[in-house]
Length: 576
Image (cartoon, rainbow, N blue to C red):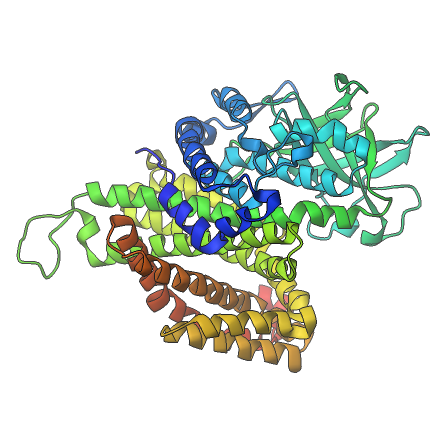
């Protein structure tokens, strides 16, 4: 089977959900003309299919390997990455002042959508560089920007985020890595970091590690954390590479999936000098970290879209070819392709509708990232609200769709050679990293619920209700979300809010996705609905609104059930 980027779908969502034409009306994004957008979306789709997709299998079976202390990528990856850099795909949204194209973040989102659908593990590398670029651009000195951003923007160098330590996972404040002043404005970095994606590889000339660490006498907890720029090779004043920093790859993890993404344990300064520079002010690490992570969380939600697209394409192709049994209720006893059987149709329609719903949610969020960058009032508030919904629901739905893809394949789905199992294994991490989905739900009820005294969510739900039209289930779901919102704001304790946070997050995400599917349905009908794409779009939107939205109504009881039953047993009782 081959992979084809969903270019027509992507352009439709960019137009009707992202509002790309509206963004292009602003001087900053004037280059995002219709011709430019179509060229980028079509071009990256072709590149992903021809360069990234053929490496999916070897990336999984061979994977990144640690040889003589250095990570070696599977055959083909180095050349494909060089082609990615040469074609300028990494520079779409990078700052124009430092070698980037300065185009909308939403266009970079489409590029990652296609790259990740072709090869999710490979696409992780540019995602991490995006975080490094964001942090340096917002918090770095002019010298740091001039030195590092041009090379990160083109992809000549890649970036990483070094947050997690063995004793400090989600509890970032427990980290112990130290940064000791060397007397010349630089710092000696010493400590160990784990789960560092693309912490080492052989595809780029340098790797720019952004490392959270503590300076001497720093306050305890998150208040004492600073961010440091620690390159694999130190950079001379003229931009040439100097000595190698003492950054040792202790090991790479043996994982369930994304085997082409080297997940490294890195030791800094254990055997020699490891020199780093402070980014931003001392103790400003948490602020800089969230700059890295906020858009990264949207890109992780996008991984759900990537895998959902790949799984749906694979399942439909298999269902068209696999002949099995006569269709029940039919007049003929001849065997038919399984795509004709009602339950297989149910799975395929759920996959197709779910993929389109989460794509709309992520593309909508990306459009508001661009509006926030333009300084449009209220845009950042919408980004803040949509981020936990997009990250959680995007990865949950991506996992569900990958699982359904295996089911459509039947027994062959459990056989690795079909590739269906790889998609399921690859996406499972996305609900965990960049802040687990449980943390995203806690963020929604702990921080986002209180924005403008609750009016941010109230206004969002009111807009959904007003635009629901004749979609009764969507209107009812918006109302149910409003009831949960008022209960949480009004009388619920912290434990009660947290106990209901996950179902509430799902309700909010489905309501928002349903609102966006209703908008697409109207757009497709307005365009006549008489092409194969538009007919499929209308069917997918109707399925989501009529079948999948009503399911979320049942979560209201769980969202408001409280915490008492969760603590009816103590820890020993749970283990009994």
